[in-house]
Length: 133
Image (cartoon, rainbow, N blue to C red):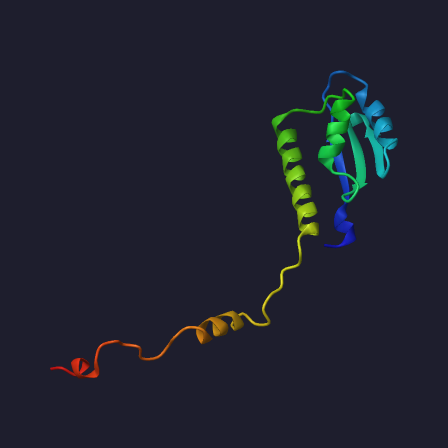
C-alpha cells in the first residue's frame, strides 16, 4: 500500500437544520491536528483531508456529532459512510497484519505433502488371494 493510499479526501454532508453549521464545523475541524477542512456551502458539506494513520472518517464524524453538529442522515449518505468506515478499518487492519509468506512455487506444498504420505502398492490382501481365480 503506497503512502498516497493513506491520504484521504472526503466530503462530509450536513443536514438542512440547523442552518449555518457548515462554516462552524469547518472551523472546528481546522483546529484539530493533521486535518484540513474547507466548507462547501452550496452542497452543505465540508471537504476534509487527513492521513489514515492520524484520523478516520468515523472518528471525525463522532467528533462533529459530539460537538452538536447534525450530519446528513439520508439512506444514501448512511450507506456511503458505512462503506468508507469499513474500507478504512480494513486498511488499518491490513497495515498491522504481517505479510504473508508464500511458498516459492505452488507445487512445493503438494510435493512436501506427498513425501510424507505412504504411496505405492499398499494392498493388505495376501498375494495368493489377489491372484485367486
